[in-house]
Length: 327
Image (cartoon, rainbow, N blue to C red):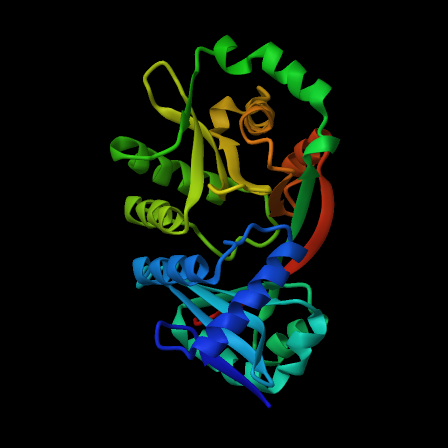
């Protein structure tokens, strides 16, 4: 018997336990850190759900065992660029295919939940199913892994020795807790970088807000994660570049890096490469338990792909963005 069950504080404890077992295996497969105990897992997950109006989770259950999840995130609620971001997680692509009938019932809900709906997937059957409901293919994303022992340490040392920010009178801040004006500045910078990303399909115009950045900060606090913002500022203390790093506080084995970029007038100086080098060196020296760094970008973003490969990253997966727009 198969079913899709919403996840909440009232969900049967048996399903919560099975969800914990699923996440341990899924996270191990994808090199993601998970709390060691069930109690801490459930507590942090409930705190996360309570702190976010925009997230929801449903469990894919087969014979009373959780074999996958459907995670949705509502972005820019009620705004022109409102998007429902859908993510389906499973251990094997075949599990998603097994739930085709059940997922068919979910797709109309996604279509009616926002002005746009999108889902990244590499599952060919799911892509075909979504197309039958009016979804179209958008951007392709490339996902990268960098094993710390495979890092190009000579290149990183060369970047750090060159000290590009200092040459251009830039201040470097590694911010572990965003507050005040920095939250406002990061929201503006994220909006700029997201809209400037090299991509094939410009179906979405991004608009980040201080409230949304604060929600992200709060969610990482609730899930006991470190959230580092590497900020580059000019002589007027204006934010001109940034890179974000996230990893668990307790014995982390992997870290995620994203949103690395600078304003147009500061491009061509090697600053994104320097920021990556700075953060990787920082992790190596201060968090030796981290063995892997993960990042991603649109497959059309040739400059960032070049930087990642130069640093020692290996491509591990490509996913297709499926989009439905309520026009």
